[in-house]
Image (cartoon, rainbow, N blue to C red; front, side, top):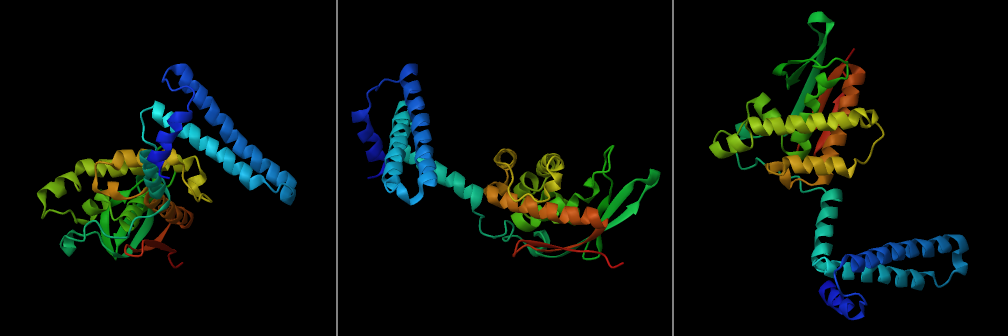
Length: 290
């Protein structure tokens, strides 16, 4: 039986077919109650063990009641249960499954592509007013200007180019990195403006700042293996109009966690080298020789 057939069949057993508030509330309460019954059956299974020989039949019955209430509520809200199921699968795939490691700029000339292999060296120094600074080098070539934390506190943000490198390596996307390395896709004026221009750079810097604010409240993600869905949803909302919108929440989670693993090492060692392999989606930290 498919979802459409099941949803239609539930109408014949619905004793409150109207869509008034009271009818909806009755079904909402029924859904909550049956969900609790599912948990209660399993609680008894944990308590009684093998003595509870009918637990599987009982939990199947309770799960069926949950499905019935879901189907009737879908009908009252003029929703299709099959479409709900498909949307849920799409959502869960995005959350837990990475996308293929194809490169978003593979159709462009090599000078307009993000680098696939190499190393970023982060060299720490002290600038004016004794402010800590970091200069980045790609394969020995200076990248951009030296950065400070640009903050009242020493929070290590001067190393934040590692986040852009993580985006480039794992997501295949980083307007900031393209700008710093002079790898904008100027052969296509529309892409150059819409994907590699100032607005896209602001989007990426905004994402980096948002995640950093989150990370400061979670020990810079040390020991964290999963990110809050609300954070990932916010990122997807911000980047949805750009090419990186094809990347899943799982991809973003991998990029963020990998970037912060490198960030913590850079802060701990006050610099170092990060090698990257975009095709393998890997970042590796190497401390400077003493």
